[in-house]
Length: 156
View 1 (cartoon, rainbow, N blue to C red):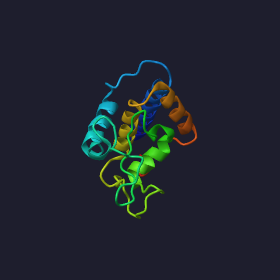
View 2: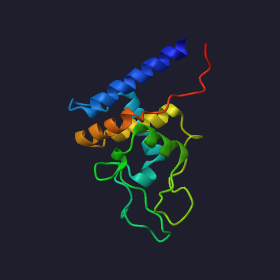
View 3: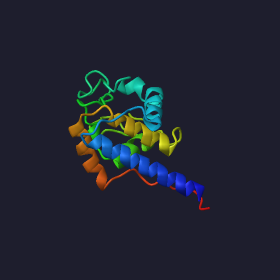
View 4: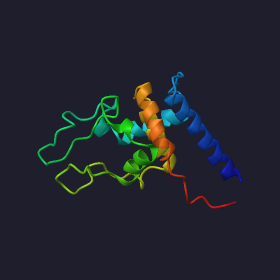
């Protein structure tokens, strides 16, 4: 029962944070989940995507290997165009851009490294880098494609 209550409370927190970010209300990045997301981002993502989400130089042009460099996660990038489910999947399973000429994952999979809550925290942290309009668009995309429900929790 305790795990169910924790899951419900976590889900409600994510919903409130997501709606606050999508609307024109002030949003504080001081919540523990966002601080955790920022910490995880800096540890695992910043080496490619930049400490401020600026991405790699010339991210829209293929490099010598025929691969697109890591894109920015801020307003100038396209991360905000993807739903919570898609962003979660990219972080968990890795990504190979369809424009790449190689077959390798240029974005490594982190599902064996990060807990599901850490992946959600990173996605929610990324939302703090976007404009209000971009957050609204992303929230709309996520209505029908929300974060996956965490499975594997044994019933009490």
